[in-house]
Amino acid sequence: MIDHEKVEQAVRLLLEGIGEDVNREGLIDTPDRIARMYEEIYGGMEEDAATHLSRTFTVDSSEMVVEKDITFYSTCEHHLLPFYGKVHIGYIPDGKVVGLSKLARTVEVFARRLQLQEQLTGQIADALMEHMQAKGAIVMIEAEHMCMTMRGIKKPGSQTVTLARRGVFETDPALEERFFPHVGEIAMLMEKYIEMPRLNAVWNHPLYQKYYRENEKIEHDREFCCHQITHLLDVARIAYIKNLEAGLGIDKELIYTAAILHDIGKALQYTDKIPHEIAGEKIAGEILDTLSENDTFSETERAWILEAVRGHRRKCNGMSEVARLFYECDKRSRNCFACPVKEQCNWSEEEKNMEIKI
Image 1 (cartoon, rainbow, N blue to C red):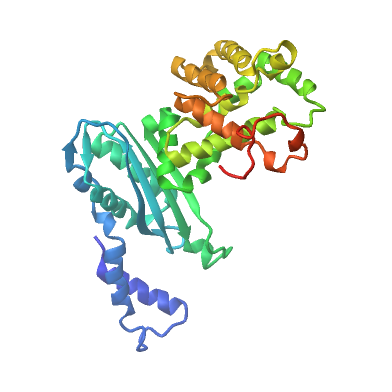
Image 2: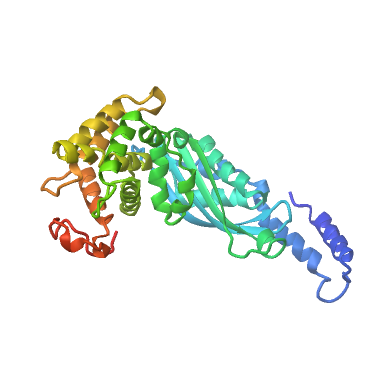
């Protein structure tokens, strides 16, 4: 409960402390104005998120619910200056959902207090888990802090981004990957938080390094397209962008792993005339089957990766989604339009990439 009288007294002392005349015309009613404003902007201290989140509806679906771009204003407890921005919320219901306005009201409950952005992010996520019994919740906040823009370092436009994961979002990275495309460009800001230990296990696997280095030697003086790490990561990045744009929800680590494996059979194509997609599928399978227990892929993930390796080379009717994705991204990664020896290349015009596009 805001103590109106104490706030008025404190404001008068503050004004006197900075050398102002509290009785001059412009300030005489300021203590009362501030007290009434505090009742509004700190009203969340007297509210409980359960009031809003306990009103649920029964549903059969357990698909992700996302509410993005919820505008909020709060006050930093360190300098008593505002910070403001957008809140993005996602949750996986367990048979119950709330009206979308209730998510915005929950944000208001916690924002209208003295706050830290990190704490605000976690409180919203915790409330969803506690009062809705959601399977999982993820909350992202991007905000500008007046304590950084009008004082101190004075960097207007700088954004602070915080993320809180709860429940299944803590254990299933694929869910987080599905959430990011819904909140737009902010997804790109969060890429750095996604680690890919299994990808690195594949890269460091002795069998991978054997065939990668063999191909590297063979292509050392090659004038045409080569198939080393620059090309592999180009394919990975283009595929990941297309995945985000189309909202496919494919795990980033799966895309990158398939990308670094898709040309691993090249050396055998050069030496033994085995089509590299066929040789690559065999080599990739052996690598995936001999990873350590902590780095293994599921059977479904393994099949997806091998389909990408096997199907990336040629366009055909009835292509699977993954084969089409890697065929198109492999082609988009080629800079044929700028290649100095493109006239000597024996690729068909359909195979060549003669314009910049994603």
